[in-house]
Length: 490
RNA sequence: GGCGACGUAGCCAAGUGGUAAGGCAGAGGUCUGCAAAACCUUUAUUCACCGGUUCGAAUCCGGUCGUCGCCUCCA
Image 1 (tube, helix red, strand yellow):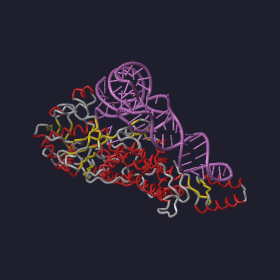
Image 2 (tube, rainbow, N blue to C red):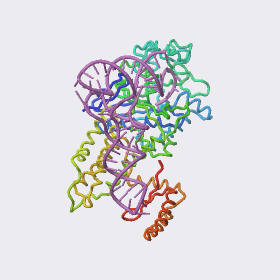
Image 3 (cartoon, rainbow, N blue to C red):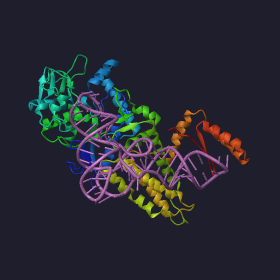
Image 4 (cartoon, chains in turn blue, green):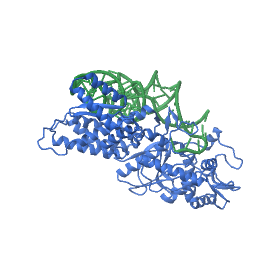
């Protein structure tokens, strides 16, 4: 069984066959550092984090490059507004991005190059395009001549005539074709600038990715990824630049993920309907956001709402509860009863790795993979449920092994990374801190209630329980006394 | 206007030719003084609608309606 991946360029799934056997080279377009990142950026980072982890799980060596765009019109404009240099602004938001990634526990890419540190490579790439007559200089600007590149539109499935019909292209008298795009822009006073054969200026947006991917991954590499909104024009232009310059096929597989939407509309700055990663992480655990993201296939739209996030909270709690209960079971037992696990349950647990892998092999179907994990949890809960007080070693081994297995699988999505019991405890303490009540007071009230219960003064006992409940404290009467827990926010 | 994606239970979401995974919510049950929590069980004769192909379709083809996206910076 091989791993198949959907290729945007052909519209179909193909098996991954690395150019260098066993070694996958992947480039992903990272952020433009001019503001805090929203959860659309989080989806991108999480999806490719998962893809890298799964490829490595499947035994591939992966070289993962994700760039920073640290020079661009938006950065310059924003820096001017704030009266700081664009370097300063970009640095600030790269750092903010890294903090967000740490909070999301997204692993760093192997190489994280910045556009401004590759201007030399960019200039030589542009010069190569001019030499091949694929680019032309106008004043101190350099443009790519799209008509000279035969395959322009191959990725996005358009042709130049159609795009003219769109009539939304900006008319620039300097350009030969309105679709020509800037490789080098002359700088205005006060803007960051580099010397070049065409005068002082700065790189256009698309050229940096061609230059940096070539430097770190070569003329041809395996996977290039990003959000669907990068298909055109960004990735289309990258192909024109890279293939124009090298004559070699640029990328084997184009992987594009879908958008995060709010109320079915794309999250974007212009609509003002975006949520930053840090805003969301104030309300929800990183793993909740991860579960939310991976509960839908990466190419589909993902609608953010309180309901869907609440679902993710409940789902994650379910997983952790199962693991926590398994953890509390003994590892070894002497005089055990006969096993209770049914053939069907054993079968479910024995096959979960295969089923998970089959789902993931099919274009990283995390939604289905998670389904298999939940399915295994259901089987384990069922076994736990019917466990006698002296459970059999067979059942214990089954549960312990099952718990380890789903934890291992969940790791690919960055889930279930906490100690199960600590996860619950941590959430409790966080909430408790925000409440106007301390543990001692709670214990005190529970003791009072226990006394009332012993005297069968149910009215008083219930009153105390209601009082605590009003403060988000839930009581659980069990055989070994009364436990309490914070009603976790959802 | 051009191009593309999607429409599966109350909600979220897999499934792309062989008879509807999983999660949330709901209902019933175990437990309890009653509860809560937890767990178990259960929940779509049917996959937007209309035709067609097929022994067989949510899955393929044609059409209709609806939603969203790209075509300008965008993850």
